[in-house]
Amino acid sequence: MKSILLLLSCAKLSNFEARKASVPPPMPALHEGATDAEKKGWRLYRVAGCVGCHSPPFPEAKHLGGNRDLPTVFGRFYAPNISPDPEDGIGKWTEEDFFRAMRKGISPQKKAYWPTFPYMAYTKMTDDDIKALWAYLRSQKPVQGKTKKKELNPNYQFPGLINIWRWMEFKQGVYKPNPKLTAQENRGRYLSQSVAYCDQCHTPRNRLGQLVKKYYMAGGSNPGKSEVHPNLTPHMEKGLGKWSEDDIVLFLTSGEKPNGEMADHNQIMVEKIEDSYSHFTEQDKAAIAAYLKSLAPLDFDPAEFNP
Ligand code: HEC
Ligand code: HEC
Image 1 (cartoon, rainbow, N blue to C red):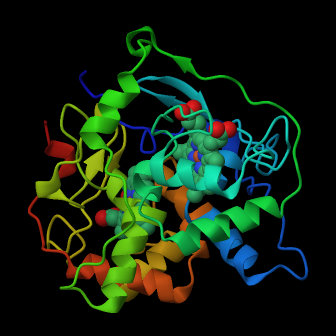
Image 2 (cartoon, helix red, strand yellow):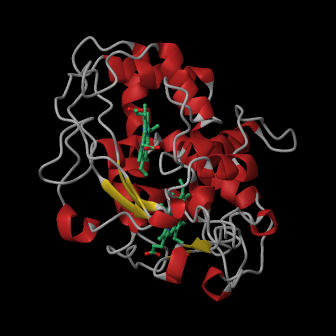
C-alpha cells in the first residue's frame, strides 16, 4: 500500500524533456462565432491542464487525441482520446456522462478512473465551468486513433484497488467557499484547489499518498524526491514571504522569480506555466496571488520531509 497514489498528476510527466523541445500544444485558435461557453471552455481546457495530457506538447500529438504517456507508481497510463469521434473518442457521451467523469471519476460503464486523471481536483469545479468545458469539447473536430491501454504494475493489478484509494482520499463535491476569506481570495482558493490543483503538488504526502493537511501548500515532492515543489505559504525564509503579489503574478506569466532567476526548465512547473497558467486572466492570476498571501506562514522544507 505504500505510496498508493503518489501521484499521478504530480508524478514526473514522462520523458517530456526529451520530447517537448519547445513545441507548443496542437491547440487550434477559437473558431469565429464561438459561443461564450465555448470561449470559457477554451480557456479552461488550457488553465486546468487538460491540454498537457490530452493535447500534449509533442511534435506528433493531435489536439484532443491524447496519448501522453504518464508513468506513475501504479503503472504507465496514456491519456485517452477525448475528441468527439464516436469510435475512438467520447462522441457517444452525453453531458451527464461528462459530469459523472469530472465530478465522480466514474466512466459511462460505471468504472472508477485512476486519479492520473486529476478528478480529485476537478470534482470541485462549478457546474458552469464543467458545462463550459463540455461545450468546448463538443465544438472541436473529431480525431481518429485509439490511444494505448494502460499497463498496471503487477502489484496494482488486483481489482478494486482503485476503490481503496477512492475511499481513503477522494472527497466528491463542488468547492465550498471559506467565509473567512474575501471574494478575491476565495476565487484564488477555488482555482488553486480545483482548476489548477496547485495543492496536489505543493503539499507533502504521507506514506499512503494522502495530502498532509497540517502542511497544506507548504511544499511537496514526487516519489524519490527527484522533483521538489517549493513551499508556497508566506513564510519569510522557507516560503514566498518575500514575494509580493505582483511577483507571484509575474511568475505565473513568465516563470521569472523575484531574484531574476527563471524556473528550472527540467521541471514540470515550466510546462504548466507555458501551456496552462500563463493563460489565466490577469484577474485570476491576481486572485491566486491574493489567496497564497492569505495562507498562514508554515516553517516547512519539503526537501527535508520524510513521511
Ligand atoms: C495529468 C494528465 C491528465 C490531465 C491533466 C487531465 N487528464 Fe483526462 N485523463 C487522463 C488519464 C490518464 C485518463 C484515463 C484514466 C484511467 O484510465 O483510469 C483520463 C480520462 C479522461 C476522461 C475519460 C475518457 C474516457 O474515454 O473514458 C475524460 C472525459 C477526461 N480525461 C477529460 C479531461 C479534462 C476535461 C481535463 C481538464 C479539465 C483532463 N481530462 C485533464 C489524464 C489527464
Ligand atoms: C505538477 C506539479 C505542479 C503543479 C500542479 C504546480 N506546481 Fe508550482 N512548482 C512545481 C515545481 C516542480 C516547482 C519548482 C520549479 C523551480 O523552482 O524551478 C514549482 C515552483 C513554483 C513556484 C516557485 C517557488 C520558489 O520558491 O521558487 C511557485 C510560486 C509556484 N510553483 C506556484 C504554483 C501555483 C500558484 C500553482 C497553481 C496555479 C502551482 N505552482 C502548481 C510543480 C507544480
